[in-house]
Length: 440
Image 1 (cartoon, rainbow, N blue to C red):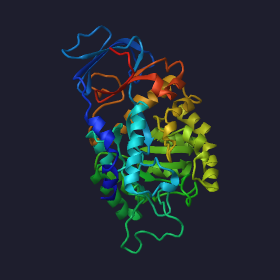
Image 2: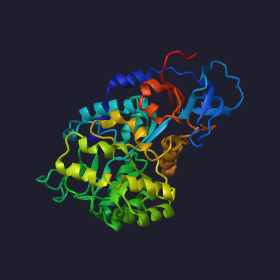
Image 3: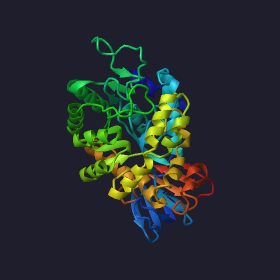
Image 4: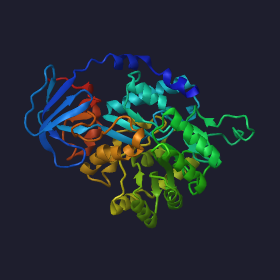
């Protein structure tokens, strides 16, 4: 109930505005340069949206249905909406406010969610801490934000990356009477196979689309060195089994090669971060078809985040030193990576700078593919828990999540740092949620 209150009391003005949207049943984009989410070669053409789906994609002019809205793209790029593979919508407050009242957390979360959507991100995979009720609130129009694939409470062992207690605080369940959920339900402590099974199943019951476990030491946590292994192979397999029973997968926070090997060998499908991987482990990841959802910007700015202590900063430097090698190995072995940010403690305002940060390692076309079709494909590993169908590409029958871009991001990816200028239109589920003036 604690977390449901947090979400339910989010900003009402946003809900009212979203509910009042009066969208036409059809929108025709004429004369656009189509980036389909996969092919770097743009195709001049026309795209018809009917309801929440793309109904036609054509190189020749289309006859609009009666009452359709017609938008002349004038040659501008039409792209799928962006996808963030590693978001933490409920971690928008400063670090010292992690245990703020649920009403405050909910209000801030609504603000963060709207910022994502207005930055062109029409879908996010929440990487732990966000209750599935937030996803339902967005779907119902109560909160303005992207489509959310929630993980629910992050599952952590005692002393793991999700154990948020201060050193002097007692264990919440060792006496048999405490609550294993920490920090407004953002994490749950689960030790041993039975508790791991219960934690996974509880997240799935609440509506999680995938499961997030902490698989090794963390940077922003205080008491678990980076080298630590979390949790045991038996506990990992229990989480994977319980997720697999629901036709979905486990994603796991980890940095070191040893932690990644343990996770992959026991069934984890997506590694989060992975900055201290080695060649042998990268080969294993590739052979198993595992994805590495990693980030660039957050590890460059992390040491400057407010609220961190000297040990947190030292750990940021420790893992950031492996970033170049990780990217080399991702390229060498063709590892699926997608586009994630992991911006927490108020740094979500830097969201779009991730595009430029990635340009040290990838071409603009590769980055745009990561931020659309590649991220969407990773999210769709949740199988039959995916209630939304296909998205992330401009294809007939797929979700109408579209961006009309001023300028050429294939020539200069940094223009996407300024969405207020470069995103002439944002459409999610066939509804235009932002557009600049001057459209027909």
